[in-house]
Length: 197
Image 1 (spheres, rainbow, N blue to C red):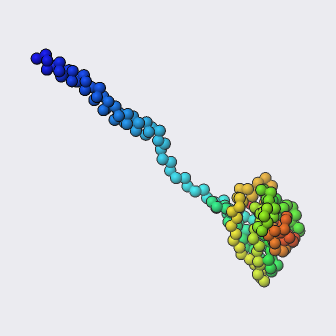
Image 2 (image 1 turned 135 degrees about the horizontal axis):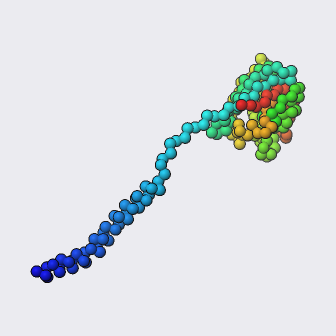
Image 3 (image 1 turned 90 degrees about the vertical axis):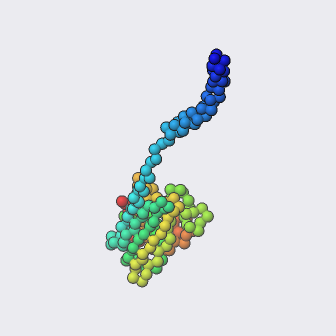
């Protein structure tokens, strides 16, 4: 009677470590999964896109007469610039964003130079250009009206236009040649509007 009992005890003694080893990987796996679950961060809900910021400049000529409005809308890929102007001389005119938010008639020199925080030379055709404030020319019809839409994606942002001294949109008497520094040989300033919210 003692022999079979001893044999069973001996068998269990030898089998116990083997059973324990087989149980260990499962236990480790459970602990690893539990630890991973603890380290997981709860899923964050997708954030709503912030509404785009839109700025506006109401332009006036040297006599203080309204010329029209320009809007500057921030998008994920740059600034969308739209405008509807009137009472301009027929022909091609440069339009630029200038570095200072002051439009004192009649010459609008208080608007300063072109908006150019990166300190480049003027012009889309210049190897060292262009200013962030350089924009394509406008062509006013015989009725003095023009509508336009540009996209500026060269580092210009609406936030940058609202710096300490502000900025302005300026229309010039002549076309921008896109290369002559500092202003494209665009002639005098015939309309100006301060950029604001």
